[in-house]
Picture (tube, rainbow, N blue to C red):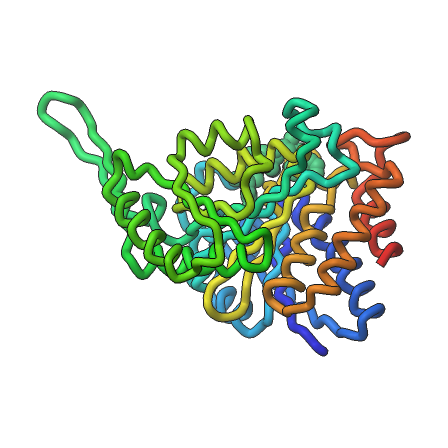
Amino acid sequence: MNYKIALIRGDGIGPEVVTEAVKVMDAVGQRFGHTFDYTDVLLGGCATDAVGVSYPEGTAEACKACDAVLLGAVGGPKWDGRPAEQRPETALLAIRKDLGLYANLRPATLRPALADACPLKKETAEKGIDLMMVRELTGGIYFGKRDRYDTEDRGVEATDLMAYSEMEIERIGRRAFELARLRRKSVASVDKANVLETSRLWRSVMHRLAEEYSDVEYRDVLVDNCAMQLVKDPGQFDVVVTENMFGDILSDEASMITGSIGLLPSASIGDTAPGLYEPIHGSAPDIAGQDKANPIATILSVAMMFRYSFDLPNEAKAVEEAVDAVLAEGWHTADFDGQGDAIGTKKMGDLIAAKI
Ligand code: NAD
């Protein structure tokens, strides 16, 4: 098969990690008989430098012409404090919305070779961590109306509106239940229904879905309790589904308990192609251009692309197994410990591609 992939290399370490992921994709293509055609697409600080805006016209169209999008990372101090249309994060929010990517999937898996990197108690880590955080990505407080105004007696006041519709809740809920069916058949839905009206609506829609997906175990978890349970006993979770802001915070917490930020992939998907795949880390300006970045999160994002956009589970497994095999031999980049000296970005990419 032939697949078209848009590459958004981005800023900082983005171009370095995308180059290694492409190396691994090409190795998969060779082994399994696929071809991948790449189109470079401009977005982020590099786009501001090149054409004056972080989200150039034509970027969304170029992505829509492809089967999937792979993104390195965008942002950096150079563009902080610029007007909105020049800031890299504006472009990220806009492309997710324009591609209709309402579901963000972030697996938090403790890789066997890296159990020692888990900051939790040994007996907790030994139970294993393998959860999938499903975060609603295009609604809620991050997209609601915001305002700032003067008051007579309290100085300036600001508001952010959190709104959710049944449609938005139902489509993300269905994603979570469908994913659970492919995993350990358990969904935890996280809300704050003891306080928030949006959460009460969220909970009622989830309960309706839970009846429909009666083969999947279901429970409600309050967001504060979820934050505690993630450090106390993360092994209890399979699929965790939640709204945008709760998911933003909880998914970072879930990633920290599995060790290095350089290891964790993510997928953002909607009802139509293309999905967008990216590491969870940022552009790491402190190590950019030094061959120090860990490319594994981006390489594992490619595995998610194979599984969720191309329905190629064997190819996805081949990538994951190659990563585990290289880590099991003790190879590591400078962001975590292993046997011997740390290796660079390129060598890590070479080793993983060779294992494919
Ligand atoms: P960051 O993830 O870029 O870096 C945090 C720390 O982790 C740094 O010390 C960095 O060196 C290290 N790190 C990150 N990725 C690594 C990797 N692959 N290998 C080894 N070490 C790695 O987060 P930050 O410093 O808060 O943000 C830097 C810039 O990235 C900011 O401009 C921010 O807006 C942007 N950002 C972009 C995205 C995205 O593109 N999706 C996400 C988060 C942050």
